[in-house]
Image 1: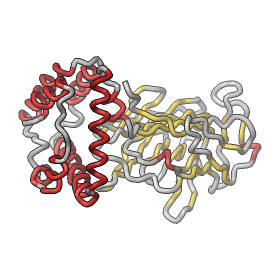
Image 2: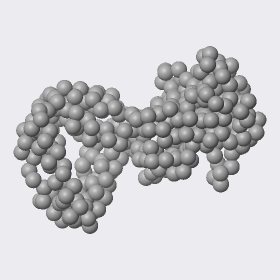
Image 3: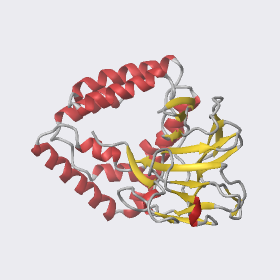
Image 4: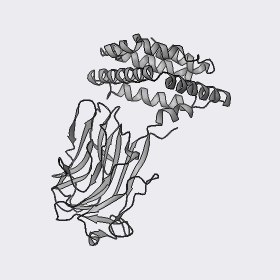
Length: 346
């Protein structure tokens, strides 16, 4: 199976004091220590030799991480921070323009900013112990849920409601960047380790191609996707319309599920788990039954994600039809086409 999460930042604060090196595979999230003297980089943190950076009384102290291409796109995010609160007040651990993780007054809190319609805040009621190393976690997957964890145990959860907004230019560790670039809320404690993952933007494509299929089917799909790229390049105006209408239909369908209370339901989670299992094992012919059960549940609770103006606009647009008419039929993968006919098409 393709990996859902891609590690894009890993700071451990070991090595040369003041040098914040990113250990993630793409090395795209190196940090800059701002108003933090070398003496505040410690050899020992949660364990001997693990390294840590200490909170600094300077209100502007923080670690600045310039946002590079590894942060784009950022549809969802998962964060883990190993830290110790020296004071009950705590403070910000890590954040950017579209997400944040903090410990405030003993509570773990998370913020998010969704590209389409704003954002929000949610927090736990669990008390973070003072003077004890803990691992604080934050997940916003942009699809089903947002979650906060303390030492791996969920302490707060809400249904997520859209892809995150862009990460823009900076991510801050150990402080909060207010509008205008002002830093005035340093974390009251020490930070040992910070990891950030994003939702793998290639997950869907990778997962599709890693389904168990023989070489001839794989080559056939590769040829079909090459043809798709050629068609889109040959008609850029219609391609732009196609992509815009498709994205709008996907967002509106998802919003319908969120508004109808379907996204966070156990039926939805179980259907997703079952789908991934069958797909990864190549049991595609069993998927239509899973989808049929899911659609039946949607209808029982009064939700139809395809019954909206955006979906109708996609299906009726002449540019969309023009693109589709230029594509060859998918006649090399009977299992997949049977799955579409039996489980997806109305």
